[in-house]
Amino acid sequence: MGAGGLQQRTEPQTLAAYASAGDGSRGEQAGPSIEGQVRGAKGVGVGGAALTLTSLTGRQLGRTVAGSDGQYALPTPGSGSYVLIAAADGHQPQAATVVVGEEPVTYDVLLAGTSGLAT
Image (cartoon, rainbow, N blue to C red; front, side, top):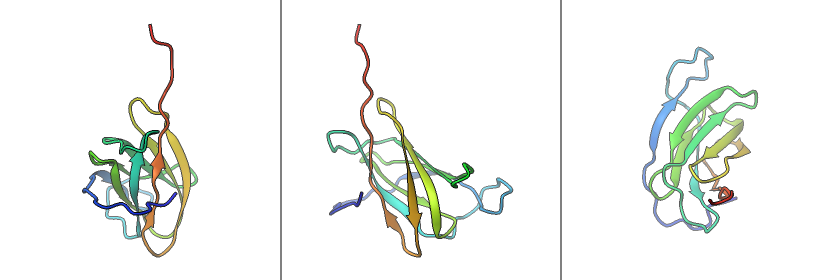
């Protein structure tokens, strides 16, 4: 999914980015970012959503929290294919494979609400 005309972005809070050297230490990511907005079923931004970037083998490469309007930006180690996982309270988590080239990628995430029985 593309952003399709987002007007304003706020800076999300980056929690951690891990170096791709394999030692698990924190480090600066040198590649283009994946950025976009996390939205709920009604199209409204989901603030505080957690986004995790992993390699295709499951190694965590970075993590961020979406801003109050659902906007996020997550750096990558470089071009390649990654798994982006988004989760937020009251929503079903989503995972998607995102292919990154030489330029930043815009990828919006749609989270469906959870359902259950009310007592």
